[in-house]
Length: 135
Image 1: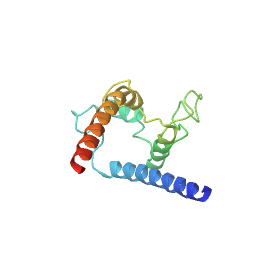
Image 2: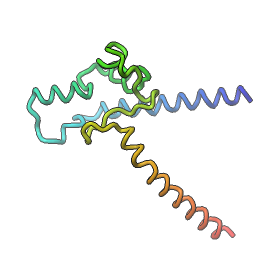
Image 3: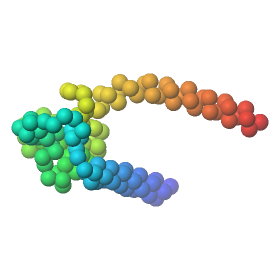
């Protein structure tokens, strides 16, 4: 039983790592960036935005920041220590690119109850119709 659980845990970790890595590489392989569809920014403003979201970092450092669990920016591991942890492994999804001063975790926490309620209603309907249709 322990061997089975260890194997399942290992496959789970490998699958999560593969999905995160593939998503990271696919998002960086397409032309443009998260702000390229907006109006053209002044070069100094564009540099400031890239610095805020760490888009000016080398790709390996962006990947490690995305993966986590250690926060590599100026406030994290090498800074004053306010935010030591960050990234997917620390369940920190980072700042929102569309809403200012809001994190993705806050957006998920706000919309999760509504999504869970809709999912529960859909599951109840599917079970009800499926059981009624199968009898």
